[in-house]
Length: 111
Length: 110
Image 1: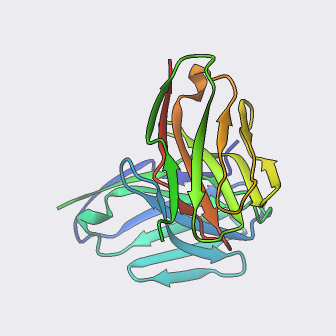
Image 2: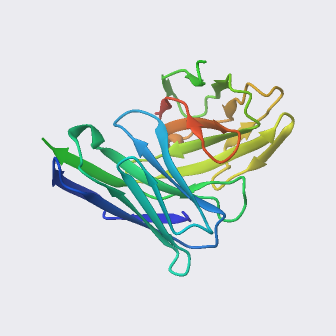
């Protein structure tokens, strides 16, 4: 079974609004990562947060991690049409060398 | 740097045929992996390698073989294709935690 589950499955917002998507996972982890996938393309790494971190920022991205709840959230501020993509969380399930992806959130940003 | 390259981009097979999906990286990464992505699902790990000569099974290894004779190349072999293997296949490499993905191979098995 897959390690992560994203919520919501789909999200549609207006350009300039913030987008929040959540990820829940099942086992302990060393780190959690978020990836973006544009339609028909490979995944692109966005940000990594380690199990001993609670929050991390990168440009318009803000990631939080709550290991007690086994959950993470990705916030994209001031969204742009170019942010339209699917977003996946990935965890290493404490293995260090096996990565498990969630089912993804499909984000549509309407210009 | 070309990054991670995959060939072919598209492939149609008949049930029972075998084929090899190619993956190469020029970043000198030790870790490489193969995933499949099915509609409405995330990526599922098929096989991975932590270095030349070392491979291991992931979440869904049945029906697939891998080998890693060099750091650069990590081919995925389908032994006897089945319609259930219709999917998009992604290869990835990483040195630490960040994975770099190839553009994918879209495989259809009839």
